[in-house]
Figure 1 (cartoon, protein in one colour):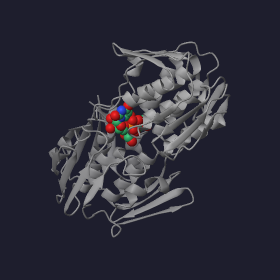
Figure 2 (figure 1 turned 135 degrees about the vertical axis):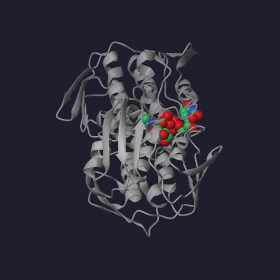
Figure 3 (figure 1 turned 45 degrees about the vertical axis):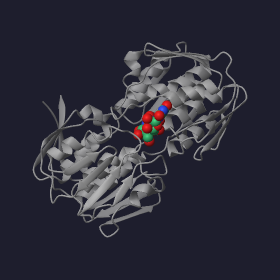
Length: 418
Ligand code: UD1
């Protein structure tokens, strides 16, 4: 088993190049199922979730080549339209493939998805959307079996702007006759990126990035080369890391526009953040005031995927902060670990009340999920003494070379095998 071993207290200085967004790459990989030809994606990130997703594509019949940081997928000879549970349980994103498999084969059988243990994570909105496109569904014994032989465009009104449901329905509509309209769709930048990828391959989608998306069915998608957008959650994680530790870092290939909900909340007296060309520069004195209230919301609201990292930071900010988690009801599991490090946090249903303490101290903690694990690493960077973070594989689902990148910035952190 591997753990991260951290000695807190170092400031961070240097440059990090941000890679492609996991949450853009994953649906784009699913979108590749719609392409009858070769799909080349640049800047392949080595996250475990991406590897799990490419395994799913290979199981469908794709031929994969990794070359010079790019992934090339030959999608010509797909024959399989099923995702078994041993592959599906490894990533939540397996469910995104359902719409694309249906688009390509007009039938699909997909086992229920796995992913982070942060709440119930239903898929009712995905299924409601597919039914609106005239898909017949049987939801039985952990598998969703779909007959799409009479699929046609339709209007899907989402009760909640679910990212995955929006992407799934978009992909289902691409090769379906007629016009599909998604109303109250999610507006995340990764959805716009999926639209751009699919349109480059020949799809006719417009409106992604707004809450109404229109998809005009086309006959076929072709070969395509594409570079997905950079990862706003990793960018945000390093912005918070620099805030916590103090110092000055440059994040290359990063888009500050995608992070306004975060930067708007940060203490302007201690933090200077600006962008130049394609980079973000962060200068921090390292000690901040509490933030009265942060509520996680769908984009452009505060991202739930940065909630644990900001709570880690708030645990030593001066005063009391309140965080409200509106998306995933059990996304506070990691706070029990932060409390072991001396944090003063009370959880009341969806609210976290965080009384800033002077210092955290090192402890042996456990990554309960991907972003919760990242939050614990950030806490370790500022804690007095030594922290070990177990269950590193959770963190590696969404961060590539996390410990090496932080070490290159000056943090005292290394991965150890125990
Ligand atoms: C995506 C992101 C994840 C992020 C989340 C919210 C990817 C690969 N993952 O996950 O990192 O934390 O968006 O920004 O892009 N819901 C339903 N029924 C459904 C679907 C969702 O009730 O059928 C609810 C969920 O329980 C949750 C909310 O909608 O409360 C948001 O979930 P959703 O936007 O679907 O998240 P994911 O697409 O799973």
